Image (cartoon, rainbow, N blue to C red; front, top):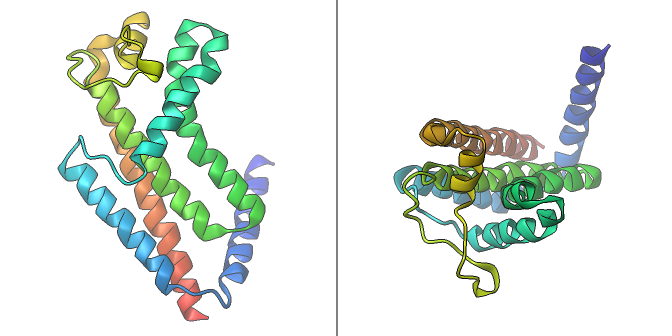
Length: 190
């Protein structure tokens, strides 16, 4: 039953996306995909690269600490990453409700930038060499992922977890390119 629902959902989304593409311009949207291609190249060639949306991602991360702090220290610290990853997912849901399929593709690119950022942060958990940002200039800043992995008693797996998150970042960006490219092809075809 679930597989039938999923099949119907994807068929419906496919049909709606094809219809949505009719009469839409593809050239300016292509520039956005090329921009995400550049962002992917930079993230792969320089792990410390921060894209043009890096400031937004950092602000959302810090907001997550404040919002989730009501659930205790562990969730409050994890909350930065939670909100950082949820923001593009909420964007996807919002754009699906608006039936803006190309914006959904771009949200996968946005998710990818966040995942790249998280992978760098996780890989630094043991060495703690990255400069940390403190909201309101608090000098007693914690390294989120050193704290979290220590609490879970898995600090020794920081590199493996970072690799897995980086893999997910690449996958999310490939979805951005595939979905965005397919939509551009449909727009050009019309």
